[in-house]
Length: 536
Image (cartoon, rainbow, N blue to C red):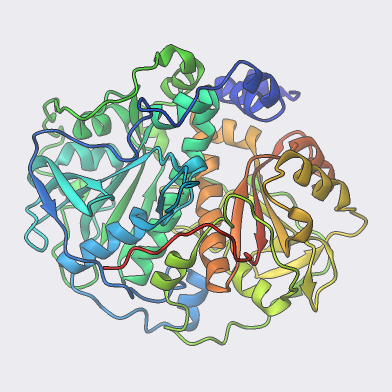
C-alpha cells in the first residue's frame, strides 16, 4: 500500500484495508473455522431469565419503497400516509428492518433462516436493540433486544431514553420517539472467518442501517443515522462488553404524528448527565472458540473508539468522490405513482439468487435498470451534517445484458444519469468473477454494480473508524439496490469474491479508491431450493 496517508491518522485502519483487500489471500491462508456443528453460534442472541414482550403481527404492506429518498419526496411533497406511533408501527419497523422473511427447507438446507437483509452464510452478526422513549402498544418505555426468530422484545432496562445516552449519541432531539441501536456480535461470523469478519460485520450493519432507513421512510417516520458516537456509554447502556459485541451504529427515529419530542441537548436538566449503571445479563453461549484467533479484528475496533466532541465535525463530501467527466445519459422520469412500489412485497422477494446463481438469459429493459439505480445515490440523513449528504462513495455499473443500452462500463451520476466510460473492456472482470465465485455465473448477469470508496480520505476524516463508516456507506447503497432490484423482479448477489486489482483496472481507480461491494444483478431461474415465505 502506497501513499502518505499510511503515516497519518487512521494508520491501523489503513493496514486493515490492506489486509482485507490486497492481502486477503494471505489473510485467508492463516486459516478458517469450521461450521455446521453443535458449537456454532446461535442465529439470534437469546437472553435467559428476562421479561419478554411478543409483538403484534406486522402488516404485510407498509408503504412505498421510495419514500425515504429525497428525489422521490421532492416530486411528491404530500409525503407518505401518516401513521400513529403505536404497537403496529413498532412491529412493522422491527420486523421489516431485520426480521425473518423465509425459511429454506429440505435435506440440502445448510442455512435455513433467511432474514430481510442479506448475510454471508446467514450468520447475521448484527444484533438489533430498540430504546423506546415512551410506552408503545403495551410495551413500556425502556431498552429492549429484538428477537427476530420469535418477533419479540427482551426487556433490558426500564424507562425512557436517558440523558447520558442522548448525549453520547448527540441526538438532535426533534421528535425522538425511539433509538435503534445496532451492534456487531463478532463471534457469530469470526468463528468461521477470523479477522476478515470485521469487514463482513461492517458491510452487514451498513445494509441493516440502509434497510431501517427504507422501512422508516415507508412508515412515514423520520430517521437519522449516527456513525460517530461515544462507544463506552452506548455499550454500557446495552450491557455489551465492547469486545465480544460492540455498538456499531445508531438510528434516531422520530414520529410525525404529534408525539412529544424529547428535550434537545441544550435543554437537558443537567449539564453532566447521570451515569447509567452497568447492566449484567446472561445469554445463551454455544461457541467457546478462543477469541484470540481474531485478535486483529478486536484491535482495530478498539482503535476506532471515540471519546471526544471532534466526532461531530461536519463532513465535506467532495473529497470522497472522483471528479465527474463525460456526457451524461439522464434517466427518464420516474412516473410511477406513490404506492406502486410496495416495500413489504419487495423485501419478501429480495434474495441473492440461491446458492448456485444462474441468471436466465432475458435482457433487462433499460427502464428497469434506471428504476433500480435512480435513487441509489440519494442523500442520507446522518451525523455527517445537518442536512442529508450524498453517500461517501462512487458507483459504477458494468452493463452486460440490457435492452436499449449498449454493453459497457458506466459511472452512476446522482442527477440521476449514467455516464459512459469509454475504452474499458469488462470481459477480464467477468472472467475473474466467474473464476473467483463459481457459484455465481456472472457471464449470464444483466449487470454488475461496483461501489468504491476513498480509504485515505476516510482515514483522514474519521481515523481508524473510517473502515467501519465507509463500509456502512456502501451497505446503505447496497441495500437500496438489492431492494429496488427485487421490486423489478431481479436477484442481487453481493459477493466479496473478486480480485480488487482487476476491478480497479476496469474502473481506472488509483490506490486510494477501493471497491468494497460487487453486486451481481440478474433474474433468478427456478431451482430445487424450497424457500417458503413466512406469512403472518
